[in-house]
Image (cartoon, rainbow, N blue to C red; front, top):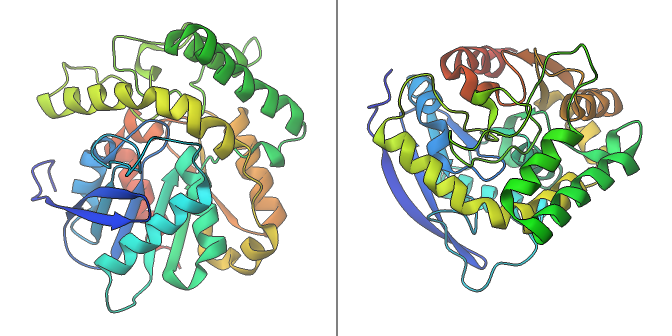
Length: 310
């Protein structure tokens, strides 16, 4: 498949918002949820690669990019976003067939909420590095970090928040640098201090070559989403407490993803803690926390393997 795979776009009215969504391919439904400040555009390459086997649906989360809220933005919750996903599944799978679901970082938190709340609508859930601080060895430390990021945003703006994030998630001396769980897309020109140039964004690191017009438009939209993410998403999503009883009951349908290069960092530590608590499988993916943008084709190939595994 190529990035020119035909795309069908639509709008879905949900409680308090209208969701922009994009659909490629044919076959069983696979919904891919963007994390951080990302929108549907972050999955263009991966969705094109997987559209030979699945009907791949991507979307802009409520309040981001082309998914407009009915009123002013307020604090967001994983439960509300999970219910949005089920409404989208109901639209695109009207015969009631369950869908596969993929989420990374903050959207992996939504994936956990969706599986706990609506297990009958989901055939397999892949939650890649959900930064759930409640599952860390020191939850208070994680909560304090994300609260400090939000406070830096309120006080000094986006760049200060990203710098606080990068510093708080920096690995110990001697380990390779890696991006944080919510290095939300500010575009290739705003790499966070101490990070590799490609790791300036939560799902939107800058490509080695000049971005295409479509990629540049995605970067601009994601940068515009950053204030909503930092003020209304970061703390409530990272502070989400999963329903471990419900997830344990549905563990056969859950795969927890971790990045090969980020296993010592907060999101992967939390993810592996979750897997142990509920008895879910763990799958290693190429790259780090933002591996899906570091090498989209390799990431898509690994996701294909995980989705098709029995």
